[in-house]
Image (cartoon, rainbow, N blue to C red; front, side, top):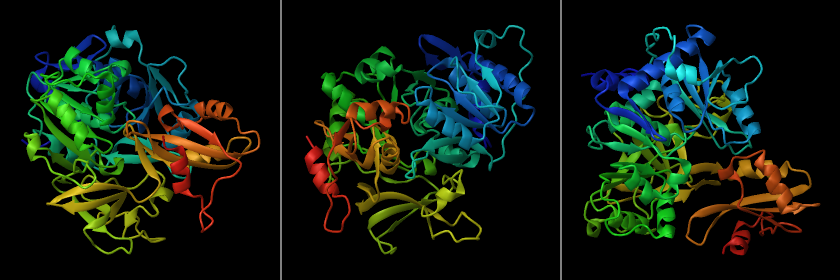
Length: 505
């Protein structure tokens, strides 16, 4: 049987197969079968088309962890439109910037008082829509073309503004083809949904589960802070999260031998997985396979994977104590270049293939991100261009090891952060003359952001309060220090090492 041509087709195939036989979504004590979720998505799709006409372009989804939000995601795809997920917990100014950059035709929301821009209609996911009272027959799904954009995720940008990453239906289709059958999903499979919809890991959660007929189980934000209790209380068989959540479980003292007996698969991505953390998790979930997925948003969720052997004594020893990121998914090609642009075994990782995105929403962001370099007035990004990940890797025993970054990008609890964006926002605050942001390991070795500023009347509490309206929580420095001036090295640049030594615990 051929694979679906667009993303919605992967869900629709399961809805036709399983109907009311299997549960598609469980959230907050509420459950929806595949038929019920399909029907709800159909009703929302009908309302979308009433407001946009027969061919909507880009639809913002401003919603939290609710059944309506997940049905709304499906509904947008059912109409053939592009999903632009927006997080209600992010500052209004940042959301407004994303909305403007995305060029929305409609905003779908379950949040009262959503930031609807002038001229953009709004669709409220209200109770009447949920109940379907008096609803017309849902519209037929409009199949999107392979080169249509499925979703746009906005990532941190070094210039101070978020960057839009459009992912095509063919990009995600290639990914789902790779993942189909990978995790032994059956009628009893219960898969976690740990990521917010603005994080592309959530797309893995949704469609790997729904493509194979699993139940997608959505924990609350509070539940995620207690992973072991969440796995057991929700009877999860499949877990996917950032490795940082292992640290939360370790701090709680809950990673006891055999404490997660239901887990069959544990997948981690978004940041490096220390071998020590993997061993602690394996001890608590002895029946679970452990896999690492690696890949930037631009390469559609993940482009490499590494599955650890079942027996921990057979796990690899790595120089940095980090689980390898493995080998590329089928169809993807990789290249490693040194600082002079020559192929080598240790340097920057470049990737191309069917999962590589077509280029940023704003083409100005493409500069410097592709190899060979883009030429002014040329054809732009072609299939032959390699995406420069900015990640340093090395080959060891046939797999790739992640060694860090070539730039000032960091990962904090799986979120990709350009330190330049945080720095730019700080420098824009009243009284700040100089600012520098760096990632400092906390007492448990996990990175957190610290900022150092100088200037007139720089009160850390005032600056922190002002950042609340400018940056989402994960991008705000945990600590702001004020110095008369920032230390410089012999070349006249800010001395990163001196600041790191001063700020480290």
